[in-house]
Amino acid sequence: MRFRGWAIVGWAAVAVGGMVLVILGAAGTGEEGVRLVIRATARSSVLLFTTAFVASALARTWPNALTRWMLANRRYLGVSFAVSHLAHLLAILALGGWSFRRMAAAAGPAATILGGVAYVFVAAMVATSFDASAAWLGPRRWRLLHTGGLYYLWVVFFVSFAPRVTESTLYWPFVLGLLVALVLRWRYGVRPPRALAAAA
Image: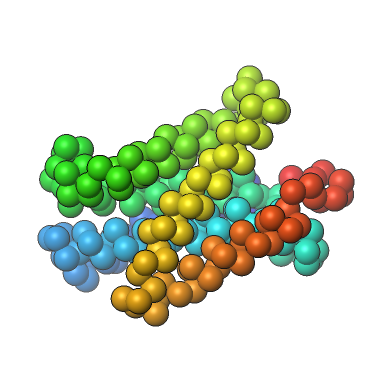
């Protein structure tokens, strides 16, 4: 597949931006439209996150052109997730009148802390997704940061989506996807074969 590298991030940004514009154009820029954007970007974020989270396990379990592509481009899938989640944060801020204080008050202390730490992880992981910054951090600390961040983000997504499965069937595929990804990663994603690791 020729669609790879930073082009993935660019096209993801275009897709997320286009989605936001379509939603706001259809539903308006008021509270209803912004809430729709928040829900839509949460779903695009969890989809991109799960793809990056399970890439190595899928490449090991079902090696084919698609899973090898996912493994080779998981860095860019991860950065694409960060782009989507930035749009999600901006929509939440817009709902709170662009005030962090009002946003935190509406979310409550638990959600604010959980989400705040998640965004710190996202920022740190994106900052160390470049060769120079990864080399500066060192392999061991890079692995700790990215592995810990991935599992923390998995927990955040799961506790955010799982309670909503009783509200709408739209949440079931995302929750099931997260659970399957976790099982595959635990079973197959710890230490990929050398050939697959070389493709990363």
